[in-house]
Amino acid sequence: MTASWIRAWPRDRASRRAYVDAVFRRVAPQYDRLTRLLSFGQDDRWKSTLVGLLPEGSADARVLDLATGTGAFPLLLRANGHRGAIVGVDRSREMLRRAVVKCASTRDVHFIEGDLNALPFAPASFDVIIVGYGLRYLDEVVRVDGHWKVKKRVMVVVWQQDDPVTDPPARAQQHAGR
Image (tube, one colour):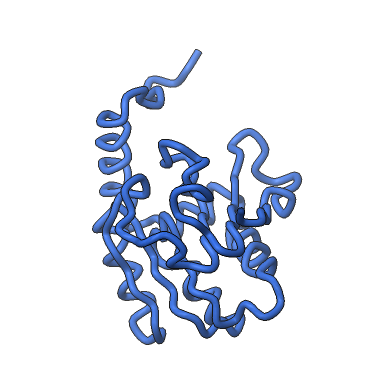
């Protein structure tokens, strides 16, 4: 039996987008705190693990951070010596407002409000694509490689709600771009 406050994931695209927009409007003010709580304090470690998987010599790579949320990855990338341009995309204006504030003093980081399924970038615009918790919002996962023409790496953190603690680093996966 499912709790009355839990809703089924909408099947059609329009309903899914409306549902996601409503959720992030509500949670944006507490998003960073919520991710720490829901991951039992592991989210920073997972994200740091992902950033640590960037290959040698990629410090100047152009990075696209999909579903950037409040801008955690741009800050982690800079803290780890990344010098290249970073573009964060998110469909939540409220989340992006927080990202802009958090990254205000961070050089060459740009944020764009947009849908992950209709990005306004030319093929091969980025060397690395990072997706934290946003993979579930893509209509077609294969488009990450095919449509966006990643030159080098696609890096994803996948958090399974059924097992958030036992092996999180194994969920930080590195995939070679095609």
